[in-house]
Amino acid sequence: MQILAGSVTSLLIASEEDWTVCLQLFVMVYLELGNELMRLEQYSAAVNSYTRAIVLDNKNAVYYCNRSVVRISFLELIFSAVRKVFFHFESNRILELLFEISNRIE
Image (tube, one colour):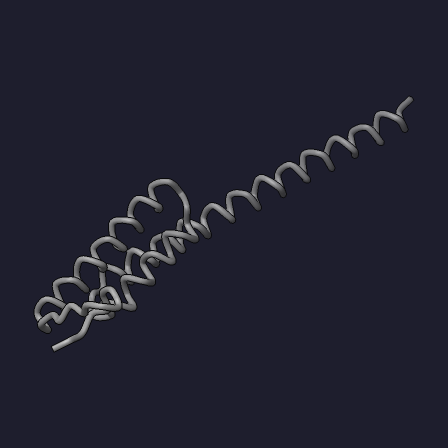
């Protein structure tokens, strides 16, 4: 038997089966929350949600897989941003070089 904290004056005593069902409900909430956060591209929050699911149920590979997908998606976003920065830098540098060349021609 597990004792779940209720109000100070009353304690709810639940069976192990009740506790397991309650735990699984929390896991499903974290899983669905992680899925929704991933869809919204809230990567850090999605990783945290999947991690909470893993803490509660560390034997389900789906939670690890989902968390990995989020991390990969986040890395892809970072690499995309880095590429844009380098492209912008390169474009500006090319413009600077063209400007220097045009000044030398004049």
